[in-house]
Length: 76
Image (tube, rainbow, N blue to C red):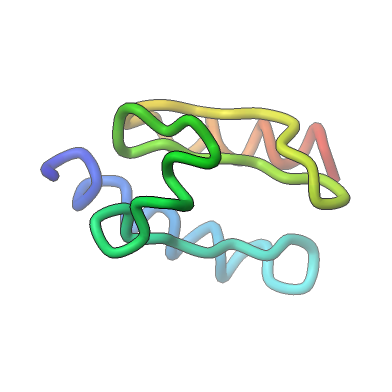
């Protein structure tokens, strides 16, 4: 989707910036529909933030980089 393509470079930047402090990954929900269903993902892009294996926050839609980094910083 358009918003997914727009947020992809932001996610990549954050992955590089947080290397060693947070694990950042992407998942294609078209190829992994069961995972999307398990986490109740209804809209994309959806960003799930895990801490100790538990979802602690969820961001839906296209957001600015600082929204994502602020969330991560508050949890690290």
